[in-house]
Image (cartoon, rainbow, N blue to C red; front, side):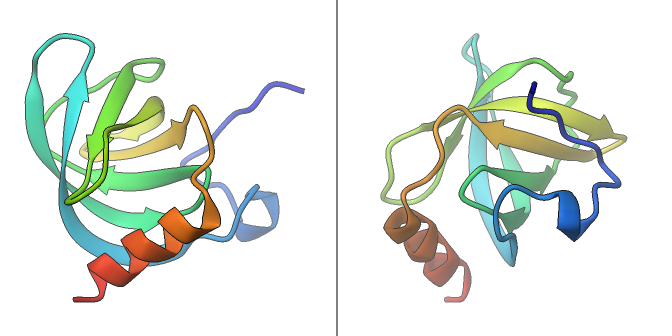
Length: 105
């Protein structure tokens, strides 16, 4: 079954626990464009972010968080300035916990 996101997806349909976070990060597309985003929630399989930069579903991006290597993801959906992205490889639970802890600082 193909993996799909919907911006109105309910918690029962999620593949992984999602935590509300509030943190700044950087996103880069396949080119050299790098811009700031605000991450608003995170799971081991993806994240939701807000940015004024325009991205289109299906675009490959790399998320950069303080102290971590770039994490590859694909834009799954877009709703004006809100985006849902799916990691190409799920985060290890320890990495997920580390990112959540960073957001609480």
